[in-house]
Length: 78
Image 1 (cartoon, rainbow, N blue to C red):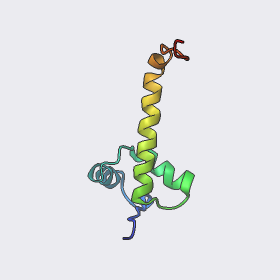
Image 2 (tube, helix red, strand yellow):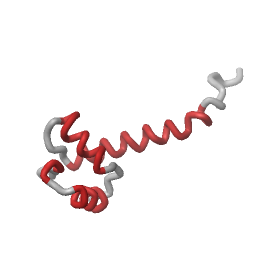
Image 3 (tube, rainbow, N blue to C red):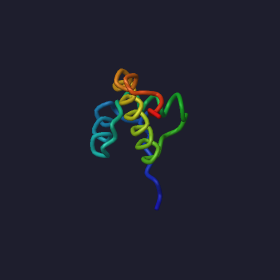
Image 4 (spheres, rainbow, N blue to C red):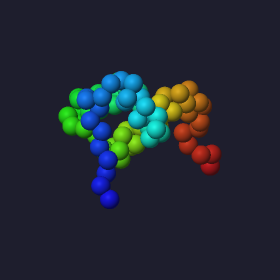
């Protein structure tokens, strides 16, 4: 099965947003354009978009929970 690719550079911002929503990819239009134009320097595949979305989600989650992680004990009691 061939992995679908998206040439976001040839789409309007509205079309990009619609595709992201349809494919349930939690990235902004600016993020996918940066991924295509600055990082990959080619149109990303659906798989790559999903992976970037997951990575972004986990990274943001870490930043939002950092204050709580500091409260955990670094070593288990002995």
